[in-house]
Image 1 (tube, rainbow, N blue to C red):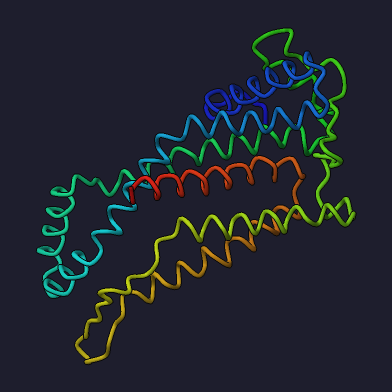
Image 2 (image 1 turned 90 degrees about the vertical axis):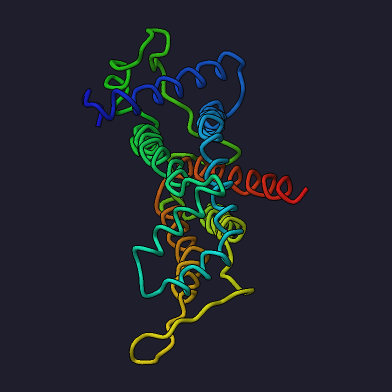
Length: 267
């Protein structure tokens, strides 16, 4: 996992060094739960870096949602001419100053960062506080004073960040996957655009049967609201608590930022 390949050199090693820098800083301040605060601080810093892309994604999604009635009309009008439909949709996007592909930038950028965060935290959380691989970690730290010289204390507000709820088998650890699943549900509820209700357009195919284009969107919304939170909750149950800490912080940031942008758009 610590081999000097392209991904590790560009993503994992910098994040690992930043995590150790934060950890050493909190140790210097004699702050209890230094490693937990390091995870929180690292997550906040990464989220701040990604904020401009996240904001662009939300703004693009909001504009496309507002344009949906017009897009539905175009789909109905040019249903037999896909090329003309594509041209008219592109024209509508250009007039509104929208680049549909820009909404995917945040997703594309955050994927390697999420993987790097997971890999970085896994080095510590899945190896008993990095005790077994401290020597390997020390080799790729940029500065000598960042090196691990003593076991890392994984305790944070009564939780052992190295343990998973499945392994801990203590009742309050089981609250972690419940909170994680709830935050994912809440995030999906506030960020997933609702299906169109004002101009729900149905089309008829050659057999004369109705084909409601909203069905697919409703199905995807249902999966995002219920299936995905349950899946993330299961991961949170099976993986160390420390990984749930940064995942939940990302969820909280998404919810707060989306609501702030939504209020700003209405004002």
